[in-house]
Image (tube, rainbow, N blue to C red; front, side, top):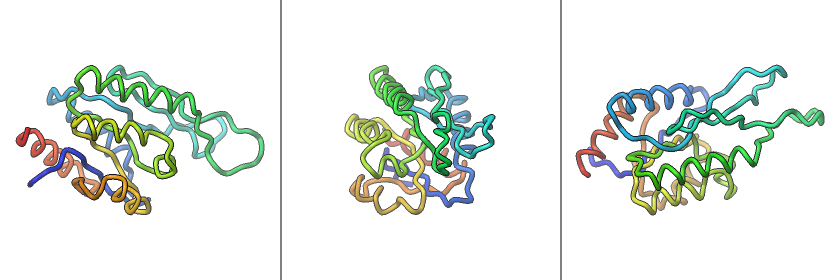
Length: 173
């Protein structure tokens, strides 16, 4: 397997990508890989919405609440906390500066497609030459390909594929 140091797990809405990424991170960390970046975790909240989320800083284990309290507008959309996204960005940039071997950014999704979210940190990681693992929903694949110039390894949402990609990246280093 010729692996580029940039990998996207392409997933469907029915794939539990958060659980897969968490298990991949756990397995890579158990191998001694120095990880940096952030993972998203869905959390149950008192408002019984599907919007309860937090980011986990992979270096420190800190959990950062990602969603704001409902605004009582009866809106069905999630409201992301801009401060939490900024803290996630700081976590990624800090990990790059501290020599992380692999950066994991939970998703390249709507925020990143619109030029926000952790898009800049994905680009900085690519420019730094540090391997990066992220997940891209099928509906954002065209935007991801345009952003990366098509220079990435496409992975199936399977733990064995992720671990094999990492092994190939390390073997080529």
